[in-house]
Length: 302
Image 1 (cartoon, rainbow, N blue to C red):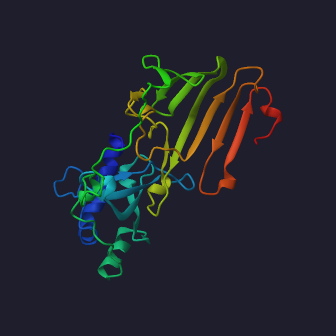
Image 2: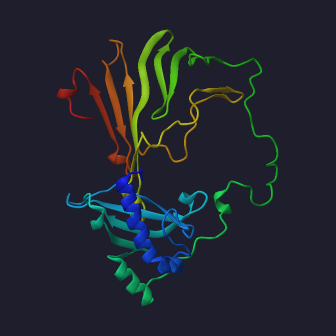
Image 3: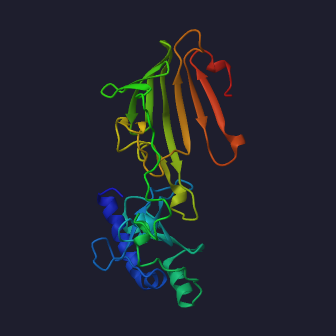
């Protein structure tokens, strides 16, 4: 949540409402929230961007996690929806509580169910957070301590690399590359046997949809401006295992993508863009569309 007067007003609301149900969250979660600056606070949260069903309200879901190392790996089953409509903070309110797949339409209803013993408690998060670390657990497996397989090139490499210009030659192919943090590796001026085949080949955009039983996740759509394909390595690595492309952040592979291809030569199809959409598990719903600057108006999408 960005800093500013509205964010401060929302934080004040969240701290007030969560403090009022701290006894309940301590019982159900073993944690409580009294405010970001309060030393008693053991929960943390993030708030989705406001959304609306009919344009009359601005609603946002908060997802609650343990306030510790890597909180995204220590999520609770508590989700709370807030009404943050308008610019008057005095009208902001807690709108809904979702716990263990049960909806409570107010804090009062939530407390009434808790007092009556009608809330089925979920198992508490383990106090031991070693599971989020990458340390070895258990004995070394047989032969695991031996060197991993590697590439042996007794007569030298079969490709040429100009690291400074990011230029490659391999088996008659010649091309330049660059690494873009949003769309990953891009190929330029691709030639085969000195004949230019492509001006450019690259992914044009991506988006990752969030979906789960957690209400906040179902309102997430992460674009390439936020979850980059290549963020750490900005040039190919020339090493003993060959040439590697960009390193990918965990979870950054897009669920939707568009690839841009440009073929310049008259003997090929005139300049066009090839877009593909891969959504869900139903392959029959995948889409392929070719757009040509000369004939796309007279040809429907493929």
